[in-house]
Structure formats: structure tokens, C-alpha cells
Image 1 (cartoon, rainbow, N blue to C red):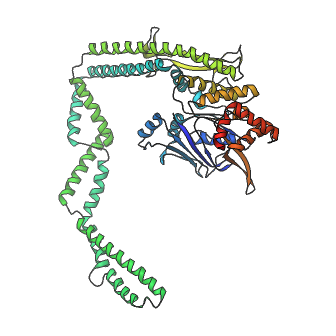
Image 2: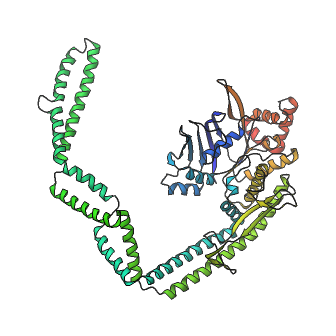
Image 3: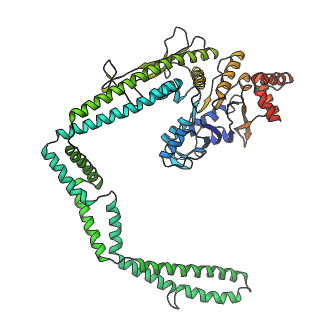
Length: 572
């Protein structure tokens, strides 16, 4: 399970320079309207590869986020050749050109790679827009994770069966292609192998040889120039090093008389030493220069051979590709494949893959019913009592796909199901796809309901960031939302932007964004509120002022919500 440790922001909208430190479990981000709460979430989305809203990004904007990574994130880094350490630091900086520079653990990566890493580290719902939630691939994965061990086993069996089926189809197609080749095509393949294989080609060889030829052709001139340089610097008594050293001896004799002369003498001594090093390096180069007419002749002949290969095949890379294809054709023709046996094997693997796909579909249907019920229950808690949540499973016809009993359908390693989550906020409304139906606030609450359902299954989940989850809800509902967030936070890190004191009182940790004037312009500052400061902030959220009555009620809310435990630890 991944966890955010720190977010550093510079020049992102009003956030001129701020640092956000996060703890495990459920935390909240509060502050007055316009202070910069949503900017913090926007900065996090941006450093995770997302887009920035409006004019929040300008030349010089930089954001970095430090995470404890999950295994999938480490696997992505390993695949990129980036060392996967205990911590992963993602950073993004905006240049004057309008483009941004993205890094992972200091190594340059593309924005797409940054986004891929971000998908494994955090699920950010900012202003109601969770890109993960809207993607069909994520929706299918979320359904599988909600299905527990049974769905996980079925998915693993499907992936293995699909891999074997595709391998059997590839072997069959290769054998069929070999059987269709004419005798002249096979003769041509054999001839191409006989021509190119002895040459032992490798890409880039011609460039290396051209550079070597240039050095060999000018070897005498290089040696002569290096010798001349060595003689000028260290030759006999007239070399530059000897002359400078002789003058330095005279300077040293009078250096104590004039400080300026002493300084010049010290510089001259360093220069003389450097000149002698230069002379030695020049003489070594003159000795090491290769004067080898036979090697030059061999290089010329090899370059002529490579030039003939390029004239015939276009390039060395194209020649290597042609050689690889010719080898496959030759080997396939000589292997004596039994087409009937290969067809039977492909059919058998197809049947096994189809059986695995049907088993996975059955597991998904069961998981879909459970997920619908769990999400519906939590939507009612979130003051959406008439909302309807549906998980639909469908297939797409594909002549080259698997036949599951009603004709061939598209199927990949994840099965044949096209999973789509649908939502309607009204009892009689038609549930629509998530990118068509819910409003921003509804989508945030749906993300929360899904997260709570996933937390019940015990599946590993990344950081969940929620904005607008408390839009349009009252005190009692806000308290229940806070309870739900605290429940999720027991197995997953959660950060929620909130205006409701009932939600803030249930958090394990609390950050406040405030607006300050500096240099004649406003700026947002993020700080952790602890002990009495937390009571004061909850009081401000209740009444706008930290009056004695509001402070007393805030302390009571913290006791009711469990936040008082954190308050006591911080105060102690």
C-alpha cells in the first residue's frame, strides 16, 4: 500500500512556497474559502502527471511528492532502469517554453510515465474529477479487487490460459505461413541467410568503423602534432615549462618583498606544473597513436562490405530484420510441423481459455452484485438515499476472438468482460456511465463509497484524495461521512478537503491552509494544527470565530469523533 509522506509546492497559483506533511490513516485539509485548499490537491494531481487547471502553472513552478511505494510502482521503476528505493520522489517543473520536466527519483521520465506511476500511488478526486474512476480498465480492476480471493484466482487462471492460447495460435500461424511458401521463396530465404549470416552484422558498426578509419588515415599527423606540442611545452631548455620554472625561481627570491610578486610566483608554479603534465600527456598520445596500415586496409574492406549491404537492403537494421525473417522461414520449413496437430492444440487451448473466461465472468457477476449492495448502502449514508449504482458486464463481437457459446467475442488476458460502472442520483433515473451522469460532488461521494467497499475486502489501495465530498450535506450526514472516512483510513491513507467540523473532528491528523500577504501579494501557507490549535480550527469551521462556546463545542466534537485521542497525544 502506497503512502504520501510529503508534498512540496513552489509557485503553483497562490502557493508560493509551502510544504505538506502527511501521516498514515485519515487526515483532513481545511481553511477559509480561497485560501488554496483545492490548489494543494491540484498541485498533487499535477506532479502525478495530470493537467493543471487555469493559470496555476507558470515558468518556475515546481512540485515534488515523496511516497512510500507499492510493489507495482517499484516494478515500473525497475522496468525503466530506475533504482526502486524505500521512497519514491516524483517531481515536475515548468519551463519558460510552457513544457514541463518530469522526474522519478531524479531520473527524467515522460509525462505518461509519471501518470502511470501516479496511478499506482494515489487516486485523486479533485473538484469531482477522478481520472482513475472514469477509466474502464480501472473499473474492471476495481470489480476484480472487490471479488476477493475467488475473483483473483479466476483472473490469474484467465491470464495463464490466454497466454497459452495465443502461443498456440502463433505456432499454428507460423506453420501455415511456412506451408504456403513456394520453393523459390524458400530458396531465396536460404540464399539470404547464406549471404548475411557469415557477415556477423550489428547495428552501428559502420559509424564506429568510419571514425576509426579517420583516425588511422591521419595517424601520422596526429602523432606529429602531439610531439610538437610536447616539445613546445617540455622540450630541452627552451620548453615553456622550463622557462616558467626558471623565472619562478627568481620570483621566489623576492616574493617576500612584494605581496603581489609573491602571488604571481605562486600562480606561475601552478602553471609550470600544469605545463609539465600537459607535455607528458602529449608524449603519451604520440606514442599510443596507432600506425597500422594493415588495420586501415581491413577497416576499408569491412566498410566496403557494409556499403554493399546498405545498397541492397537499405540499411544495416533492415538487413538484420531480413535475416531474422529468412531464418524463421528456413527453420519453419525444415521443422516438419504437423498442421493437424497444431490446429487441434490451438482448439484445445482455445476451449480452456473460453472456460477460464466463463469462470471469470461468473466470479465477476457475483462480485458485481455484492459491490452494488455495498456501494448502495454507503451512498445512503452519504445522503444519496435514492441513488442507484450498477455494474454492467458486456462483450464485444470479434471474429478473431474466443467463442464463449454465442459466437466469438473479444478477449484479452483480463477476460472477455467489458465492465462499466453506472450511476443515477434519482430512484427513477436511468444509471448512466460515470463520464456522463454524476456531478462533481456525486462523483466524489461515489468514489468514497467505492473506497469503503474496497476497504471491506482488504485489498491494497493507494492514497485516496477527496475534494467536494461534503458538498450539500448537513451536520448528521457529515458526521457519518467522517465515520466512513475514518473506517477507510484504518486500512488506507486518506486525505479529504472539508469545510465540515464533524468530518475534521474524526481525522487522525489535520492540516490547515491559510492565506497571508507577503510582498504586496497574497499567498497560501499549509501548516499542521495540533493540540489547542486543532480545537481552535474546528471551532472556526463551526462558527467562523473561536468563541468560548465554539471552543467548548469543538472539544466535544473531537471527543465524539475520536480526534480527541490524537489531540491528547499531540498535547502530551
